[in-house]
Image: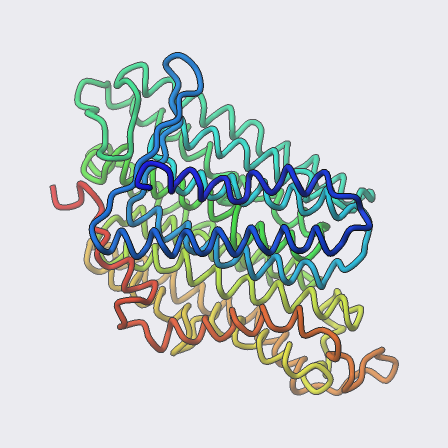
Amino acid sequence: MTAWLPILIVLTSLVPAGGIFLIPQDRHGWRNLLSLGAALVKLALVAVMLVQVARGANYESAVPLAPGLVLLLRVDVLALLFVSLSATLWLLTTIFAIFYLRKKADLSRFFGFFSLCVAATTGLALSGSLISFFLFFELLTLSTWPLVAHKQDRPSLAAARKYLFYALPASASLLWAIIWLESHTGPVLFTEPPDLSGIDPWTLRAIFALFIAGVGAKAALVPLHGWLPAAMAAPAPVSALLHAVAVVKAGAFGVVRIVFDVFGVADMRALGLDVPLALLASFTILWGSWRALDQGEVKKRLAFSTVSQVSYIVLGAALAGPLAMTGALAHLVHQGLMKITLFFCAGIYDDRAGVKNIAGLNGLGTAMPWTSVCFTLGAFGMIGLPPLAGFVSKVYLGLGALEVGAPWVLGVLVASTLLNAAYFRPLVYRLWFLPLAPDAAVDRDTERGAIGMIAPAAVTAAASLGVGLLAASAVSPLGWASPILPRGYLE
């Protein structure tokens, strides 16, 4: 099983995708059964792998694709962190999507591409080489484009075109970087950074810039972020997938891989690349928060919040100290839990109350208390209020900044926290402290029948609180991240 398990974990979403495409539109039960069954099997296999890795097992799969081209899947602690997050949130998002979309049109196409997207994310997480990473990175682009365009109305099609406008040049940049680097080093595996000593420093700086541009579009680094707010034209389950499970996380994960497993911290610092990357991440954090302030739609405010929040992961990778790295990897999970909660709730407000704009949130805390409690926990976590998940991430990033002699980062974190509060406080205030509009189409029965959507939101909201309260536990995201000492930072 050590050779087959990584392949099986990818196939548990890849193979069902093919079956789902073939299911007739009116066969809702079969489609839901296959989607949920695949998600449960994937989660079970990931759990088996977690247990076996804890016992000392090593997993590596090599699949020949063509002469000289091998698809390498390999399990390390970083891969486990990401694949566990994606498998867990895929199950919850599948449950939410089934109840949110119910019997709308083109669901076989939707859930088929949905499964392909998760297969790509899983393969990307388990990739053991640069070329394997690139192949799954591109599969992720191809499988998420139809999800953004799913409604096939004018805004959705425009958003899908904009997504490709950003994604395809980024893909070209990433491929160029890989070819350029591997022409000097040979195939790059993630087991250890390649020897870069024989390459001209300015060539290495150019290659690094191409890598960051390549993964930076999916990570929504400014100025490559414009596709993300536009993609909010997609259905709520797609928004949740883009922000918490797949695309932006794939970009941030790619930055971590490039910093620690391609260049290595020692070479990155010697080349003077750490400070520019930290400054880019800091600017993105502040710019995303600032732009969130003037958004009138709930989902677009959440989208600019993601632009800001995902760059905490990039910032931690750029600082590259043990504490900052720990905070960044923990935030990979923390942000996923908090942001998926918020998008679940935004979808429920839209589906049950017809509320898309922030002004429509007035009084919904009384009419939709379960949804509003979940939303409030997610918002408070994003602000960084203790003891929620976001507080833990920010504390470790702040301590990590001091550890590596970058106290200016504390100013970025404080400013970001104040901006987080400025754009989330009005939403929470409207929910709980303003009266329901007289013409609002909601009452105390609005949440009835929505248990299939509320339950996933409640699970992730409770997890956002739990990982903060239990941060010192060995099984918390922080506990997982703490032993991952980035190769090269001690050199």
